[in-house]
Amino acid sequence: MKKILILGGSHRDIPLIKAAQKLEYFVITLGVLESYLGHQYSDKFYLVDFNNLVAVEKIYYDENVDFLLPGCGEQSYLNTVKLSHKLNVGNFDTLEVAKLVHNKWKFKEFCLTNNISTPNGFYYGEIKKCLNFPLVVKPTDLSGGRGVEIVYNEIELENAIEITKQHSNEIFLEEFIDGELIAYSLIFRNQKISYAFCGADISYLNEYLITTAYPIKIKDIIEEKLKNNLEILAQKLNLVDGMFHAQLIIKNDIPYLIDVTRRIAGDLYPDLIERCNGIEYSKAVVESYTTGNITQNLLATQEQFIIRHVVMPSQNGTYKELFISEKIKKSIIYRFNLLNEGEDVEDFLHTQVTIVFIKGREFLKDLNSLIYPIIKSLI
Image 1 (cartoon, rainbow, N blue to C red):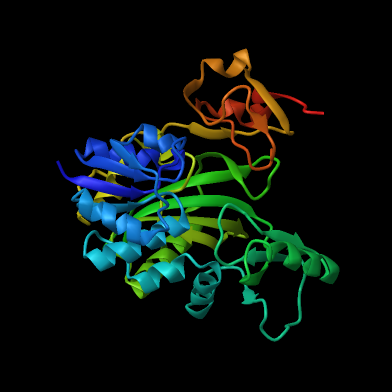
Image 2: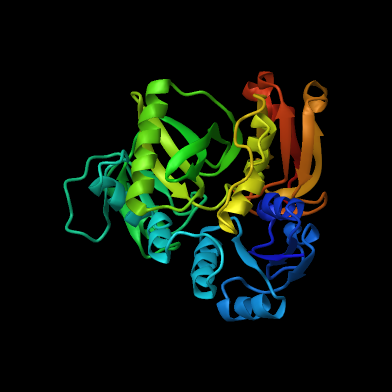
C-alpha cells in the first residue's frame, strides 16, 4: 500500500485524509497535539510540527512515504511544495509561484501588473500616496481575517497599523469595495477551468471569519469575466493541474479578486461541494497533488441546496449544550463537533463549537437563532 504524509492533522484536513484512504493510500498525519481531530481519522500520526522540515523529511524516509500533501493552511502548503520539490515527488507549482500566490501583497501586485481585476492597493512603507478612505489594512501573510481592519480616516489608519503589526511586519493598504463576498472553488486542467463551484461566504459576529456557506448562482457576464481573469492568471503563472480557491467581491457586475489559495478551504468546505454537486472533489485534489493525473468525473451529477454552517458562541463562558430548534432538527444531515460540553470559551469571536450541514434554503434568515450554543457566563 502506498503512503501519503499530510503536513497537518486538524479537523480541516479530514476531507483529504478520507479521500486519500478511499484511493487506497495509507495516511500519516502530523501535528504537535494528540487532540488534533484529524489524527483520529488517519492510519498513523506523529506529534511533530510540520514546520520542522528536517523532522518531516526523516519521517518521509523512515516510513517510505510516496507523496506529501498539504494540510489546510498556507504555511503547510508552502512547506509541502518546498519539500516535495526537494524530494522530487508530487505535482506542485514552483516554490516561487507558490510563494507569490500565498503572499497577499505579491499576489495583488501581480494582478495589478497584469490587469487582473482586484482592488487597488499599495505596500505600507512605500512613499505615502494620497489616501482615499475607506481603506482595508491587511497583513501579507495571514489568513482567516487576522489583522485585517477597515479604516475611515488617518487616526483609524494609524491605530489599525499598530494592531496589524502585532500579527505581521508586512502590511499593505487596499481600496475598500462594498459588495457581495463569494467564494469560487475550481479545478484547473491545462490552465483551463474544468470545474467550478460558486458559494456565498457569510460571517456572524466576526466579520472576517466565514461561518456560513452555500451554493449560489452569479450572472453569466460576471462568471465569464471571472473565468477569463483566472485562466489568464493560470497561464501567466504556468499553474499545474489542480484545485484553486478564490474569494472575491462583486460590485457593479465586476468580480474583484481579494484572496486566493492552492490548498483546500477550511471547515469541511470540500464536503459542501461534494454534497451539493455529487462530484469526488477531494479525491481529485489528492490525485492532483500526487500523480497529477485527475481521473475523477468532475461533471456535477446533482444540484442540491446544502448549507455548511459553523456554529459559534456569542459570548465567553462555559459551553453547556447546543440548542437546536425543532424546526431545523430533521434538516440537519451531518454534524461534526469541535468543542465538548463543559469546555470554556475564552475567545468567542474565534471559537467554533460545531459544524453542521443543513438541507433547505428556508433556514438561512434565522440560522443563528435556530441553532446556537448555550453559554453560561463565567462572571
